[in-house]
Length: 337
Image 1: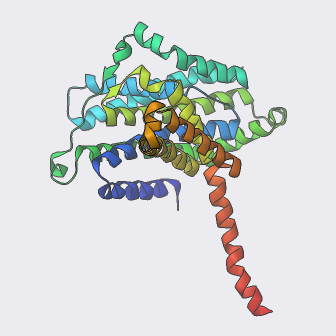
Image 2: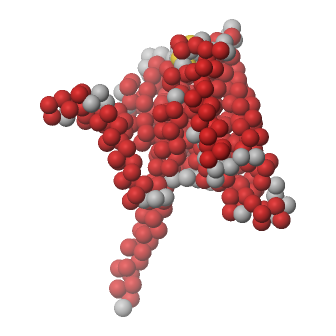
Image 3: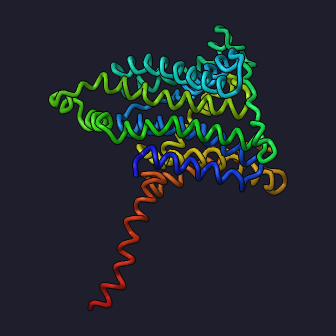
């Protein structure tokens, strides 16, 4: 099955699954889809080229601001505003990704990570300096449910549909790039830069292109998040959120798109579940710690996950698939004897 056809099938299945969810769960699904687009770009960047980015939240913010500005400026039906917003989100995040990619071609290791981290820290100041609405951010246009569907679905479900479709549009080209010749060049640079140069592959353009390719899905993820929340604020894309994207990539398995989906759902649902458990702690322990208990449990769970399965959830699933034929072969072997 080709990659676009597989993506279409998974998108239809995800949209069909929204009928079994309540409005809040659909909102969580839309958030997870937005994070999935960003984490997919990040996991390919880190897993295939070894470039660590701690600032993918800024790329999501660029996409969110681009979407909100362009979609709000369009005076027309919602499909036109949606398309204009998505194009602007991809352009804004792609331009920023190209700038970071130019730096990535010259920096490596902690220096590149430090540069991207500085962008996250500087985002609030940039929002107050540039026409980005300051700490209050900007409003994204509300996309209502189309009239033929208004009697069938709620607005949260409709926004989940839009977020899922946007994530599919963002991630499908990334999968094709990873599985194609560009992916081979990235792996060659990751394995040995000197050998790649001798083979005619220049590491600089490959690194820059990988950063730009990972930035566009992150920007579209920011657009999907703006659709679900109707708001883009610098506080929503801070250091904590940026590190959470890295955690999702590591927990899912670096280099794995399916792992990115698992990691995105994990970091979306698990903190909420732990908050609910912390509220049930004896003697109000969770309330006295002001939410720190949930953070502690979340961190401990992720440490346990990465310790038990260093390759993330994707590696665990691969091991389970590899072990299944062995179990099925055992009875037949015994019978033959």
